[in-house]
Every structure is written in C-alpha cells, then in structure tokens.
Length: 55
Length: 382
Image (cartoon, rainbow over all chains, first blue to last red; front, side, top):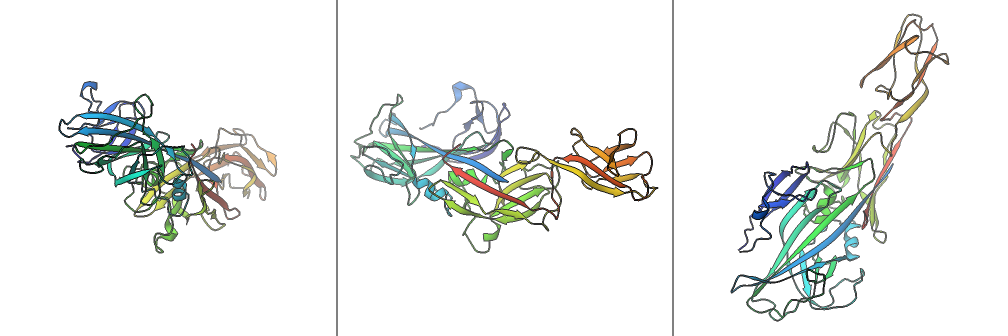
C-alpha cells in the first residue's frame, strides 16, 4: 500500500528556489529548475527517483 | 492606487488502473481540464475558499462548454485526500494534488471516459480521458479485481504587475493561493467576509511600512502600522473578479513616510497576500517644489528639511528668499533616513525664507492629503 504519511518541509533547492511542501512522497520536484529534491533540499540521483510509487 | 492581481486555475488528472491480483498497473490515462464557470461563482463571491475535494467520474461524451454544471453522464464521486501540496513563490505555479481510490468491489461494470473536480455542490472542472499521446480513451468496464486511482492536480498561477510582490510565508503561505487550492484549515480564504461578526472588520488589513529597510516577505508583517481594514465587497461574478472597498487613509491617518503597503488577511493570524515597495510604477516618488524649510534669524545656520531621506540622485535645490543657492559654496547638505540638514556657510538673515525643491521615494503622507487604495483579484487570467 502507498505510504500516506505526510511529510512537511521548507525545501531550499540548489537553484535558489525556496518552496513549501506537504507530501506523501519522499521527494518533490523543484518547479523552477526541474530538479528532484528530498526534504533536505538535496538533489535525488535520477535512478532512485520514485514515480508515484505504488506497491 | 488600484492594484490588480491575475489568478488562474488549471486542473490535470492522472488515472491508474491496478489489477489487485498481480499488483500491476494495467492501464493509465490522463486528462486536462476546462475550468467551468462554476468556479467563479465561488471565487468571485463572498465565499471564495475553493474547497474542491470531490473527484467525479462519468461515462459520457459531448461538447465541452464552460457553462456546464455536470459531467455528461455522471457515474459517481469520492472525497479526495491530499497527496501533495507545493507552494512556490509566484510567478511559479503552486499546486495541490489530491486522489481518490475506487476499490475493487465498487462501481463494477462502470466505464470511465470523463472526470471532473468539484466542491460539495459545484463542479469546477471537466475533462475527457486521453492516453499519453492525447488520443481519447476510456477505462473499463471495471472489474471486481481492479482498483482505480484518480489523481487531480490543481494548479494556481498568479500574475501581478511590476512593483507588486506576492508574499509567501513559511507558516501562513499566501492567502490567495491557499484559498484557490482549498488548503486552508481556517474554513475561509480570501473571502474576508461573513465568517463571524466579530472578525468581520479585520479580514483585510492593509499595512504601511514606515521603514524602508523593513521587508515583509518572510514575516507576518513588519514594523508598519495598520492603516485601515476592509474586506472584499465588490463581487463581480460575470467578470470573474472581486475587489476591496476603497481603503482611504484619511487626513488624520498615517501621516508619515510610507515606504510600502502590504495586504494581509486577518483570520487566525495575519496571512499574507501582496505588497508594493516604493518607488515603482504605482508611486514614482514625490517632488517637493518650493517647500518651506525654515526662516532665518541671523544666527542659525543649520535647518532640517521637513521630509528627510531625499533622493540625491535627482535634482535638488535650496533657495534663500527665492534665490537659488549653490551647494558647496553657499551650503552643504547631509542626508540620512531620519534627518536631512542644510547647513549654510553664512547664517541666513533674519526673516529670510528658506525653501527647497527635492524628491523623496516614499509617500510623504500628511494631514493635507488622503490616499485611496483598492485591490482587485481578476480570476481566469494571468
């Protein structure tokens, strides 16, 4: 089942964009530069990006 | 001063069909909405918090029209749960992603061709299912071993003229975005209206910053003062907009340097909307001409300008009895945020009129002037 635990955070992307997130996903795309960041603002390597993960 | 903000909604759907026996996603579809006029009945009205938490699905087809209030052939709906919300600083879009899950045992036999997002009473968007290439497709007939998940992502884009900043606060976000995404937990968004009589007068507060160094981007509000408060009371549904009452700073109100104006809602804490920091296209500064500074007495050499912190990149002049004096020869000038002083080489004679021309970047509000401000939200455009 999908993990529906909400995570909340303020993400500061490497590109300088700051955005506020509430999400069940462990990473959120930056709409300014399209990088995928975790909740620490660290970019996620492409091979580990989870896309709407359903188990 | 009339500030106009554009605000547009867009709604995307993503649909997945999972075979519960294999656990595999066996089909995907997507849909791009048209926004229905019903959304403006909510946004441009006194109840403008768009609690669009109902995802509808149906099996019909037909010709789209923004005037529609239902799907072509409604099959059912579920209340959606929040998957993700992201607040970006405008002009980047912010969004809320919500989902429903149609469990295997429900709606067996249904075919889904159309979807729509709605509130409890109003359908706000309508879309037909497509494959990844944009071709029309349908899902179904649904079996009792299929679980269908429908995601609805609602995007909000704001547009505002140069000179306006949208405020985004880490806790209070932006009240307009919050309202359009239907994410506020306060039960109201930009309505500023009719929630309770005790709060009614404080729904929209307009703050004026008296300090040019202060910013209001990350704080609820800065060192400014509440100049006045009002609420959105001009609801223009046909033209998809709502507008505040004219907020008038009267002759006895806020007689000070006004460096910026900021709008907030005031419901369970000041929730930010927008600000404008001068000088900009709404206020390019003010040019004092022949402004009285003082009168000579034969001994005093230093006189403070009645409005300090002048813009020294623009022309300024000092006169004695109407005769222009020369800086560096007849006088020197010191300029700071709190005090601007002209110091004469020789004390002006008794009774000599000291006047000047200069620019300031702020609004030098005094008891001889009023300042009128309105804020308009224009929905459906950016």
